[in-house]
Amino acid sequence: MKANSKDIEWLLENATQYMISKETNVPQSK
Image (cartoon, rainbow, N blue to C red; front, side, top):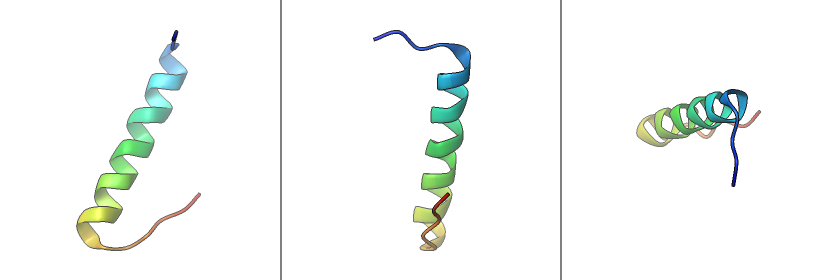
């Protein structure tokens, strides 16, 4: 699977959001 920098940035952003929401127990959806 090929991933360009935009895909990686998106994945990193979503992963960060997911981790934050998991840590704070506040579900976030975009």
